[in-house]
Amino acid sequence: MVISNELKPGNFFAYDGNIYVVLETLHNKTAMAKMVIKLKTRNLRTGAITNISLSGGEKVEDVRIDKEQMSFLYDDGDGIVFMNQETYEQISISKEKLTRELKFLVPDLQVEIISYEGEVLDINLPAKVALEITHTEPGVSGDTQTRALKDAVCETGLLIKVPLFIEQNEKVWVKTEDGSYDSRAN
Image (cartoon, rainbow, N blue to C red):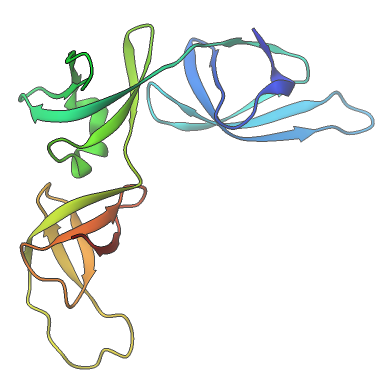
């Protein structure tokens, strides 16, 4: 058990049958009222961001989360297969659980698998991923005083905005946080 006052961003805990990670904390104490701990959390099973209010000193269940580095192998139709590079253990995660992450998965991409008692809860992608541009219109020179952008489709099907000088079959770095263009990849 962990006391609510001690929860900090990045801590994991169980509450009302769900597992949460703390994103932000706010301790609210007034002279006349008992301390209230307001937590902005993400439910690791559903991905939903929720606000939870706990009273000061209230206990919640501390959970031990396992983190394991694995690489993306292939899509088996129903799920996505990852492999631990040291033990060669493979796991398959349902595509329904990885709807956002599918747009960034390329072969051999290293990800962090987060699990609790054998149940896969989440995967952490690297900050940036190198993706190949499979389709984009040729850049048109002209009025480019401002940063002109055009649409481009990546090898995973992700649609992004890229500068006019980026051509088809080039690799670019894409931020996994918001799916935006970062720079050219070598």
